[in-house]
Length: 73
Image (cartoon, rainbow, N blue to C red; front, side, top):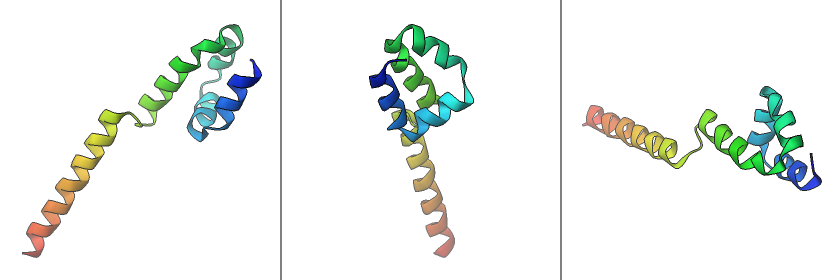
């Protein structure tokens, strides 16, 4: 694995954790360092860090606040 890929992984906690949990990525990154983009996408999907997931979480929080406000009234 090249140095730039290692720095990119170590600078992101989620990538480092994902790589530890899914060690088969070491083989892919050693053979093709450009595949880090695919690994990042998989990690985002697993840890729910995509924009879609963030919007769903925001909607859930707003719904919870609305329900809480209705209870208080």
